[in-house]
Length: 207
Length: 77
Image 1: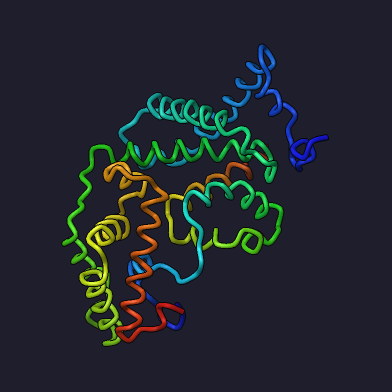
Image 2 (image 1 turned 45 degrees about the vertical axis):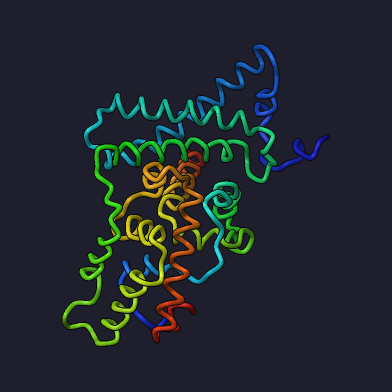
């Protein structure tokens, strides 16, 4: 018995995805059914962000997500190592495709402001007039850090993702990048900002 | 950071100093992590850095919530 076949949670039908002919076709159809179930679950779970779409249009979005997920799963079959059940492993592809499509559709007609000056809106996110002086100083250090410690690209992504609330997939599409690369950029920006703020007298931000 | 009730926006700007994995690694580990969670296993110890990533990345956090919810639904249907 192979290591794969000994893996916990193995579902026998998964092996038929490698097969030729009717067995293979039936396994692919079964896979697509699972992926469509997951994609519908995700699309309808997030339907509040797409109030303009009818139930039929939402289902079309789910169908598209399931189709794309099936391509990804079949392309990556050999990556499945049995560290979870095959069903769970396959589900995550459908949830990813569906959630990205929902976010992009929700933002399709919305302007994404990539003007770094918008970090000034942070003034409204800080302490109110009754807050203590130390909090006001922290806010000022953060604003200074955004202004002086970040690269223009880091400032652009941090402001868009955090202050403007632009989903990272939408940002990646507009900036012709990808989620992983943009998150790394965001992570580096946060680290640099924490270092600046810590050096400005707030070492607790690095604890 | 501790000892200060930081504004949520400032928390999201500053992020956490905890070691964390990236989005691609999160996707690779997500199925295993959620199954460990549902089995009551110490998922955060067994998949280090994933929890911190979910705190910092709203998109991956949504997909984690959805996978968990879908598996929970499967378990009762």
